[in-house]
Image 1 (tube, helix red, strand yellow):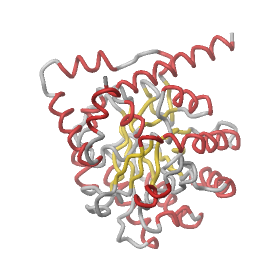
Image 2: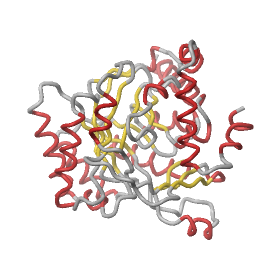
Image 3: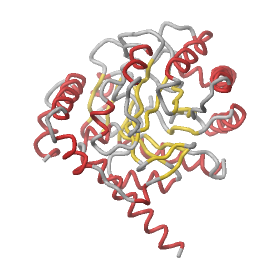
Length: 352
C-alpha cells in the first residue's frame, strides 16, 4: 500500500513540505485514543536475539532513526512507535540557524536516494534540551552535535562543547558531527589536529560529570584509508566509545547517469542506495583494523531488510535508517529487525 499508493502521492510534492506534513499527521495519529498502542503492537518486532549492549547502553533491537529526521527533538516519541530502539536528534548547534536557502532537499527515485544541503537548520541546543527534559526512557536518545555555520573552525571546539554540556543530562549518548558536507569547511575539522582538539575538550568535560555518557564520532564515506587509519588512532587516543559509519557523500560517481539533472540539483550530501557499498567497505575496514574492538553504528545505503543484514554481517552492532524509511515506509523497521533476527539465529545454528 505504501509503495503503490501513499509514496507516489507524497512524491508529487516538495520533499521538505512532505516531511513536515508527515510529522504533523503522525503526531495527530498518536493522539487518537488507542492508536499508539495499536501501532506499537503492529510495528514492533521483538526477539531476544535482537537485544544487545553497546557502549554500556541496552538496546531492545538493532534499528534506530538517523540524525537529520528529528532535528529539534520535536517528535522522537511519536516516531518511536514505528519500532525504533533508538533515535538520534539533531544536528543541533549552540544558537538557532535557518540553514541553507530552499530548495535544499531532492529525491532521486531511480537511485532510491536523496540529496540534501539542509545546512544544520535547527532551533538551537536550548530548544532541543528543553524538549528532552521530561522524556520517557523507553527509547534511547542520541544527541548529534555540530557547530554554527558562522563559527570559524578555529572556534569550533567551543560550539561542540556548548552543545555537549547543555545536552549532557538529557541524552543517552553523543554523536560528534564533523563530516557533514553541507557546512562550509566543516570537513576540514576532520584534520587530525582539529579533530583531536574537539574530542579532547569533550572527553575532558565528561570526566568532570558524575554520569558517563558515550561519545560516538560520525565519519565521512569520502575519507581515504590513510585518513581512516589516522581516525582510528585518534579514536583510541581520545577515549571514544564508537563510530558512526557513514555520513552522506559528496561523490556523484555512484549515480546512474542523468548528469544534467544532477548538475541542476547542485551540491549536497547524497544518501540512499548508492552509498551502501562504500559504507560497507568502511565498516569492514574499521572492524578488521580494530580487531572488532570498536562498536560501529552502520548508516548509509540501508534501504531494504537485505541491506540491514549486510551491515550487521559486515560488523555493525547497530544500524540507523533515514532514506530507507522514506522510500519503503514505516513497516521497513519491523522487516529489518525480523531479517536481522533470522540472520543472528542462523549464526547461532552455525556455531552449534
